Image (cartoon, rainbow, N blue to C red; front, top):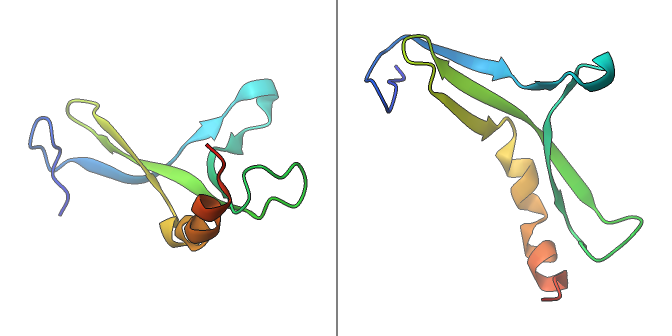
Amino acid sequence: MTICRLCNSNKIIDNVVVRDDAYKGRTAIVLEVYADPTAIFFNGAKSSEMKCKVCADCGHVEFFAKNPAVLYQVLPNATSNAKF
């Protein structure tokens, strides 16, 4: 059972989809990680849809990646290709 971090309520709405309503396209918000952040094309992008949990009592919202393992797969390449 999930408990709200702010008010300790157990009235949690889980797996709420976060959508961008711009231009009425209603597309899901995604998180992206690039294997080669310096590349213009073929940067090895991996993405995961963003979801959230909402407390029905106080309205607190927590965001999370639906598939974080997909993002983590490119992390070794992304850090080795990064130029700071």
